[in-house]
Length: 498
Image (cartoon, rainbow, N blue to C red):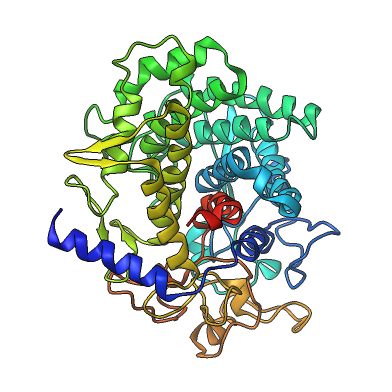
């Protein structure tokens, strides 16, 4: 083991021992509540985050389509369907793996999923068209105003047969397929509707192949450009459809197309993509998620031993472990995992989620992993994931929780419009586009607590400025929280094991 890796391991263990155990149940409840603060559209009577009010009630009406609902992805007021769909898929996967541990929070998790799937049913209601975004992002980002006051353009952007967007379409198909499994036991009619739509949207995504970078790049880039290509979303969508249906055609699609991932670099609308790495997973790149998800099926399918999925899943694990000779991530002095790119805690939550899920599959297969000459058992995967979750909740050099509302010390000035501006109840009059700048520049704490929001996190030296203007570190996103929901549910039921 390298000396630097040993120091990281020792530091992580010391940090975990120095801080009292966390209330994972409380954190779970808050992590789900966060999604209510991100809701767009007409809010329901049981809305618990009551400082938020109805917003964007005419989305799509200018073109005769109801596109109300769904989620704002982060601290702005645009509905970006690509990351929204990934967040939905991860919420659904969290429930499928760990729903039994959620207890009274399960219904709230189902509500969070349904808020998205109801919207995606609207966004895919016209055959041959999939809506990819609502809201003109540059105009939105030039304003600092509450979603309840929006006066920027709510332009809908769509992909079609002539102007395809396979990544956003296939991710929506994955979200609908995964969610259909979630609702089978509680609303079978709705589950069938979701699955049928998932099938239709997947056919569209596969038949009319192309990246939405080519056709919507002016509006989706640089915010949610697809850097890894659309092939991973197609395989990801097929894998979820296989899990939902067990239909051989979807399994065959996965097996036949897995080799297309990372098969060459190409340029779309000036954006270079290479298919990504087997060690990547997030809203853009599904590679590691595919291999972990598919590894669950291997023992139940007539598949020869040369299948690529389990070796690639093992490679992914070995890329994360501090003691692994093939580690490709870095760790802060306090033990937080780091990968290139903004909103670093998205990596900590998504990759940790895969570690815990894969550890469950390893248990079923009675299998260990070999990272070079280092033998890794399933408990080690869970231990590393727990270290990341505990860091987020406060087991770090600053003793700071990066989840708003959890613990005694958490971010007060998050980069989030509606949280940083007075609520409609506090200030009934309109806050115009530029009127909110004074609140953005203020050093005061946000007046509205976006409970459960997890921000982008500290820098690589474990420092955190708690500044709205430092959006890379202070902005929460749905795709940071979604996998964390599953992790917290798992540790809520298994914390005594550590």
